[in-house]
Amino acid sequence: MSAATAPEGQPSNPTWGRPYALLMHTCGAVAAVTFGLMSLLVCADVILRNMGYDALSTSVEVTEYMLIIATFVAAPWVLYLGGHIRIDVLFNTLPASAQRGLDLLSNLLGLGVCGTLAWQCALVALDSHEQGAMVFKALIFPEWWLNLPLLFGAGLLALEFFRRLISRSAAQGA
Image (cartoon, rainbow, N blue to C red; front, side):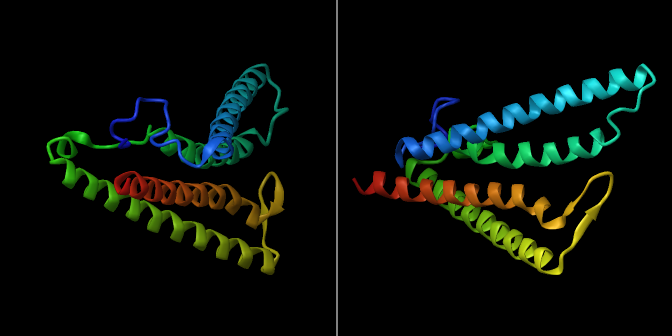
């Protein structure tokens, strides 16, 4: 089954079993909870500021970090479900063999880009850790922590593109 024909909200190809599906759905749940908490934090901050309190002075910074986490944790889950943006106008007019070729090319490109991004994130995080770099804003913490959501998300995206390549090859060879 092609990602283009997968029902919305269903995995494009459910290979790799339940543990992988659980990991992907956990990513979606973590992202949803993070977006929900972010909404509550922003609302609480607005209400308290309108009442004259500045009790949540770090809320803007925390919201920025939550947005990074939610986005990069949700991305692999969205790709797993086939909910990512696809432009099907050209794709649907092509013969099935050309669709398979374009699908293969897009998965190879995705694997390459996300694998490279994950690798670079790991290198930057290691370098930052070795240098002992710190973020000094309202919150103070090691700089390499900022790379973890991107490393996690890019790594899982690369894994999902790899899974798509393997499962599509197996399906076409069967």
